[in-house]
Image (cartoon, rainbow, N blue to C red; front, top):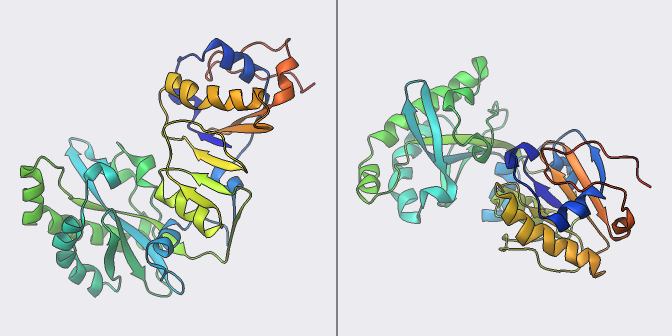
Length: 313
């Protein structure tokens, strides 16, 4: 299965004629809910990223609740403060964590939330039993958004908003950030609280390989017993069922050339029996080799121009 972004992201970009013919003959339907929730069976229900990535990073996630407190760069503007960089985009190193964490540990330790960073881009808070867990979006989904639109709300969120403000003051005044700016790097001037939860009791998947550059998706794949690998440059034939994460895609020409065309060639050559394209907006295309005989179906030139198809023959 290929996980794809919402169709609207591709705008008016057009598919090649051969791919358009194949996709026009596919079975189409619309589904509700998160496609990742269909790819993984998780009990209790949820997506506790912090606990699962912690388990993969250090193996000590069991028995505690966890929260990611990832370093980010936010840029103040006239309307608020926008999230501009996180994760690999910050070029974080172990030296960054070693310089900044000692200044943050008293703040979070006194609040009962010890902080550490087993990986430079993934910082964690261990939460005590009964702590209220804040809800913030994945920073990858909030990139470019106003920080204040994503802060925990209400009385339960007040403590987290206060902690974040105090952490921002510590980071803003830290001399290591001046060194980063002098080196042409973005400062680490805020944290992003997200992914709260405990290790699930049960994680299973029908896929035996998860192909993604998303550390959370790789971690869930590993817990489910699937082989987790980084995303290559293009589709390649492989045995077994794969979940391929292409949600970052924006260029339809590149997606067609590097992923769809070679996948369809595998269908044509009988190296693959079927494939599914699942879009983040809930639209789904199911491909099978025998669909090539559906000559009456019109080509699907553009994802945005997609129209309901006739019932499958």
